[in-house]
Image (cartoon, rainbow, N blue to C red; front, side):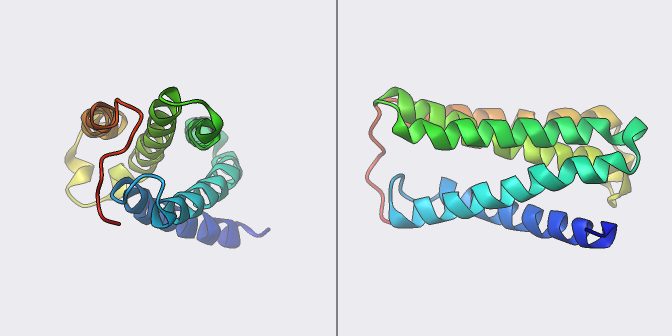
Length: 158
């Protein structure tokens, strides 16, 4: 696949994953809408995970970590998706942790790669790109785990 097509697939998958992640997060767990957003998110993350090493290989010395982050995000999401087959209440905690961690790692990869070229973000030290997604995402993830700690999702309209 030509590099420009790989970039287009990667960017498209990134946009879809960034949009579908919150779609799944904000809909009632177990609902048709939640599962639909989750499947699309997982597919887009698969596209990101498969194209990341190809794009990193273009400048491996400076971008190898993006292939690692892509693999970590894909692995976390796979574990989160597979967790729905576990017994309650552990399955919900593993599912939320896996999918949420994948989202945070995906955003980390985006900011590490693109942050230095974004307006205003280019003024920040590089460590911020590595830490900020986890600093924002961890409390959100812990809050979700706390809300769903009994293994049953709260009643919410879809």
